[in-house]
Length: 453
Image 1 (cartoon, helix red, strand yellow):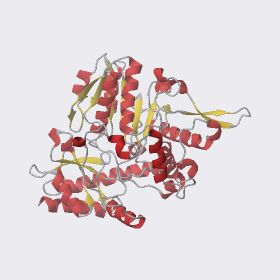
Image 2 (cartoon, rainbow, N blue to C red):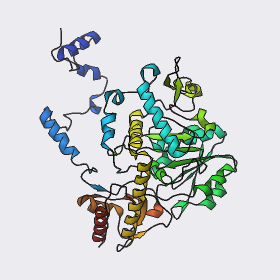
Image 3 (tube, helix red, strand yellow):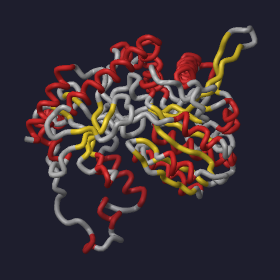
Image 4 (cartoon, rainbow, N blue to C red):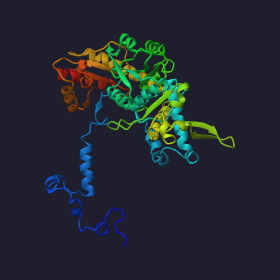
């Protein structure tokens, strides 16, 4: 019998036929082995079914409760940032050939997708100063975990040293990765918002596979990478560096500073914050580590007629080819979001990226000066910073209470560092991007003064 409603998964007739095949008369009989005493009695406390119009209205009322960047002024960063997203990005990535594309295992019919991925890799190499980049990782945090794994495999060592100024959630990912690989993780304390170099030097030895740092770090401060590089390289370990890619519009590239592996999150490059994700991680290495890089690599080649073409290359190390010998078991990529980054960088260009980075520095430093002048507020650190800085609140005031008052006034406040650092209770991490205006910064400072009073 032909179904009238072809998209309804099961009709009453379908159910009756299925029950007949397995020899029972009702669905309840399927659960007769479960004692009555442990079964839920009554009706679940759920609302009644809604028709389409009512459902849409209900879902819209729920979504309106979100404090999004369109209606609220945000000073919250800590890994996800309110950057300008050029309108052309949504236009390009909404095309069906990109929007529905998956990992291009068949290069002969995936040339457009492969070229887009190749462009992303090229951009990442250019801004990081590295030789090879992949396309791509799930996000910046998992990329850091993969980098730790690569370092251990390459050096045949089991110790990873990581600074406490690295994003706390990324450090958790590294710890989780290390547990499965039997690695030892040593965390190094901070001083004035950056890695304590004396403690780092004392911890590094011939057993250290890598030193893992972030610059600008989680607290917004810029690490002294030139001083850290020789500490690990004299012991023939690797320097792994996580970075905010927007900062590389002005700061020296990690490659020129001596990094062996550079990772980060491409979210600042035209990827909407989207209430927390998804994002796209990037992963770049020196040429000597090319064959150990995780994820996909697209290579440029020529066909039999000499015409330029693109292929997935160096796949022998991939889990879908030789699982037991894989350097990583990452089995997908973030090609659509990598495309966002590529469109962003091609739209902005070199000068545009430099201008955006400059605006981030100028506006964040104006905000820090303005807040430092406010009654009851002071900057926690004197180290140089990019677009984030730490504000110290009076000891009787909690960050949570301040943020509740700010959100009621249409402002998303900073991140509560006391959630991860005992020594930084009553400290707020403030992010200021190119999207913030002088008026918004002044209003934020005035509101902080008001709620503190």
